[in-house]
Image (tube, rainbow, N blue to C red; front, side):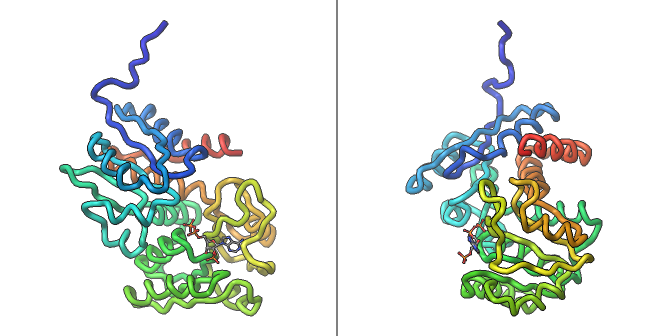
Length: 293
Ligand code: ATR
């Protein structure tokens, strides 16, 4: 037998806390980077009971984890247990990455950065000056809306089934940026003009995700324009019904895999100080696409 030397007493430990956690592909993403870049670190999935968050965070600190990711349902609640939180993450109301620095737990958000990097890479465009519609008004919507406002989009429309949640996201934007974000109820086909005049449309709801790929995030069909960029934060399936419909109209479409990979890479770079080369990021994306598909 061969001795497995991958983990020793010096190996840095990181992981992801969430519940459920069984379907995460973050361990594959990070451990593949560890292998490819010969970084002595291991990334583990950590299922945390919904009432055990505080104990879990204290435990991770006591166990000297180098850092950890935070996923559903803890991205908002984790904030109160951290020593420092970045200004952006506070505006977004969500932390997805924590780094242990000098004995302090420092939280930030790489989700929206992942979205932006994926968008720029796949379109060759900058979002500055663009008109953007976001469907959904949950945590993902708010994080992306804040980041897009920071980048200087010219217009933000938030469409949601529950109007007051869309209004809450707009309030955060309008109080912090020189931008008038507007909220609309997504079940009203009257918002069609809003979508038609948008340069970019983003689905941030989980509608259309495996195992329901035929579901659509609105109760009516959008008449996409060919020149629009249409994004879905879902990566499983690779192409939701929403993205297929946009593609049929000739739109540039982007799924959530790039966002997932780049939020992970941003966390990885923060924990290790190692820059992930672009060609490795591309290869990782192809491999994970095959794994999911
Ligand atoms: P996340 O943190 O991933 O953004 P979330 O905070 O639970 O998740 O938000 C989910 C979003 O998807 C919400 O905007 C939700 O709409 P409501 O605010 O009306 O609940 C939206 N959503 C979920 N299921 C939906 C459905 N079947 N049809 C339309 N919107 C839906």
